[in-house]
Amino acid sequence: MNQMVTISYEDQLKAKAKAVRERLMGKPKVVNVAKEVIREANARKFSARSRPRADADAHVRAWQAYHARVANQITIEDYRQQVCDQQGFDNDVIMGPNRQDHIVRQRDFVIFEVHMMFPTVAKLELARRFGRDNSTIRQSLSREAARRGVDEEDLTSIERVYPTLREDVAQGLSLYEIAKKYGVGSATIGRKVRMIGLSDQLGGRKTRLPQHLIEAIEEDYFSGKTGNKICQRYHISRAHLRDIVRRYGWSEIRAKARAR
Image 1 (cartoon, rainbow, N blue to C red):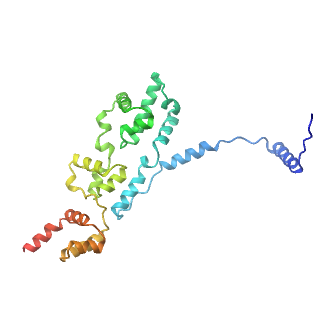
Image 2 (image 1 turned 90 degrees about the horizontal axis):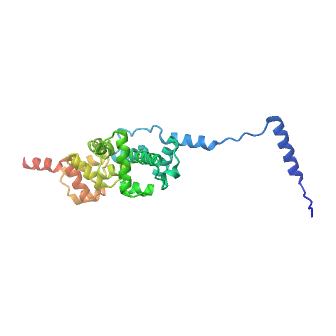
Image 3 (image 1 turned 45 degrees about the vertical axis):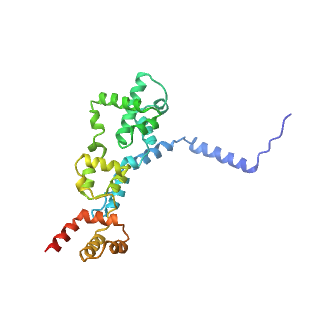
């Protein structure tokens, strides 16, 4: 049984306006703006960042350095997808169980690139992100390193994984500040600093205070005020005060002054 379809006056006007527009301007083009938006967003991720001010406090420099590292601006999953898009690989195939030779080579390439971008990420965590076991990731990195003629020891060298570690220690950053910059634990940075023989230059685990505050503490320290009074006045712990005294060698200076 046929039913009567009623078209409203508003729908008729819209249909007429659409017909006139198509007659004058042609059919509208289908433009995929998503690719352009993604391309511009990725370009902003890798854009040049402003360098920290020379007079900035250590914790400010550490915070800025952390956000200036590309590895801290993109996730492993996003970077893996980006590598696949650049090389023309299928991310689903890379993450899948396919063991064909050409797929294995592609997978080795992607795993190697991700490891190069995120050197501080443990291989066990990398294996979890790729849905593999730890030994598979190690074999994959070894195969790709052989293809590229790269020494495997260089992949885990301190200079490559922590490229500015020596500079950070020289600037007086604490273990906590350096660890925050690289997204690892303070104990890890402590081990690396000892391995390169710079433990005697390390500023300690405590956050560095502004220079004017350190000068005020120094004045009170040499004036003979007790450690408890100094800690109460500046709201710092005894351990932090001991760290400052050791770092600047105040105890030796005061001992020599008293000996005279």
